[in-house]
Image 1 (cartoon, protein in one colour):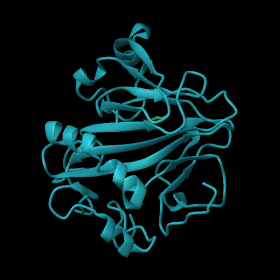
Image 2 (image 1 turned 60 degrees about the horizontal axis):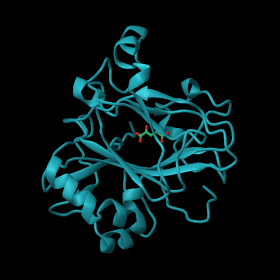
Image 3 (image 1 turned 90 degrees about the vertical axis):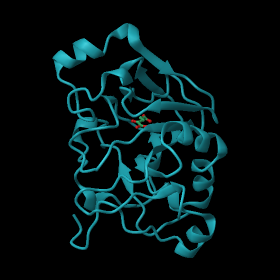
Amino acid sequence: MSGKVRYDGMFFKLDDPDGNYFNIKHQDIDKEIFSGPSERYKKIKDLEYDELFLMVIQCQLFKKLCLLRIGHEVSSMRSMILNKSRFNSSILPFHQDVSNNWPMSGKPNFTIWLSLNGANKKNGCLKVIEGSHKFDIIGDGNNLLDQKLKDKYMKKENIKYLEINSGDVAIFSNYTLHGSDKNFTKQNRLAFTSCYMDASIYHLKTKKFYPKIFGKNALDQTFLRSLNYKIPEKVYFNKKGI
Ligand SMILES: O=C(O)CCC(=O)C(=O)O
């Protein structure tokens, strides 16, 4: 965020200046770049290509979980920092991290959400609807639920706030409804998250596969060093840049 460490082509997304999630243009892929030091970056992706973060993504605990839930061949749909800025952060509405409208040949499986400096109700910790992963895709999944679906699935008594310490990790199915409130403290709320899935899943438009985490030809430290701080072309980019 400060620009001290730079990767060519790394994904950056700023929060809306007015702290309104609904104004964020998720389709605006031209603006997914570093645009100067700011504490208001909301997402920084492509961390599979950073040596330290790759070590976390490939740690033994997550490998065991992948083996149980996915198998030996595993990729990452995305690995990123989620910053809830101390400056006018937005509320992230409840959603699932899975959708029938995403151009992917399969569905992502589970997400790890690792707190980097503690998460609580005051700084906008993760909140989930307990048990919601059992309901398959709700509405469009990733998009906002209409009132009827909200009434059915978002019962107040099922909302659980995941207040966790720095270094603790929350692990949840991509079908779990989750979101987060504003940050009302004077410190940014920082988390690192990675989403694991079967490595056979590819992007339907570009036919490209996602960064490989476990299995044959998985990313390793030697390969990352050879990249020399340059992020490979993203799965959703083709030569014309879609
Ligand atoms: O960190 C947050 O506030 C939301 C997390 C989220 O939506 C995710 O990890 O997919």
